Image (tube, rainbow, N blue to C red; front, side):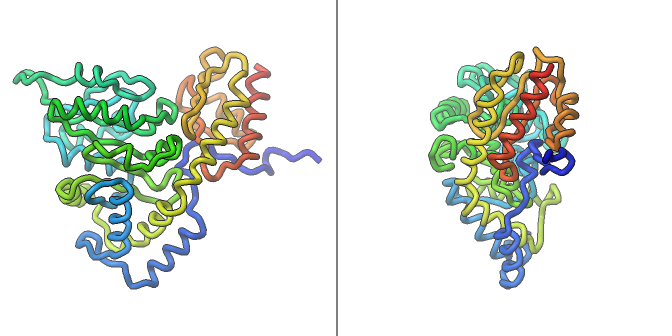
Length: 354
């Protein structure tokens, strides 16, 4: 019996943001509501949020942490809390904070981004040093450097502790703050087999997203010194991020931190499986993934991502069609081993037929 594509499971590879909360997370929300521990978070009265923030700070090896609504909000708060209007921020040219946060650092903070070319998403120490402006009245003051780990647009690439520490060393020599956009920091930690705090030990601030691979329905965390979090709390309020009984958000985030980190390896394994089954397609360019993200290079094929996304959609496989000649596929908790095999089979059928 032949199964028609319309009756097959939808395999959503657009992002790991498509992950649905687990049953345990939903139950945690219910229990938080029943517990009597909810309160006004603006006043620090929500005990569930306080528990989450203490747990996250400990996991990240920082003095304090703060619940924020999203990774973008967390990154913006980190920049606004540590740099002044007119300051320059050194940032990798393909980073999320530069390309995909609606120009927030400039429009909200008056900060001037200086994009530099990285190597697999990593700003080399010598590149950072060359980008720092001298103390000259004609030039913006270089105040910060931002790293992204894992680096989305470079293909989910991992930045190691030694690489982070080398950049931090240069930053300290020039009195720069260093922020880590760690939306997928736990993917990097799992790939390297180390605690997440080792990746951010030397940075001034870090943002982690819990609604991607960790499957919480909403929310991110920023962490750093107590002074940074104190300032960040005020900026969060300015941005409309002050929340009330938001322990119902924090409860599934606690589950995410406690139960969902180790399973990220499944996504990494499926990404490698997909790579192994498609990398030899003639004309296709694809790097072996570090974590859960693959970019397929289509330059030597009669496809752009829009056409490929349309063909895959006929087989109930979803990707974004907006990356030109680079097709992104993000493995996530909703995509299992058998789904991955099916995606590989469909890709082989579509691309080899061309």
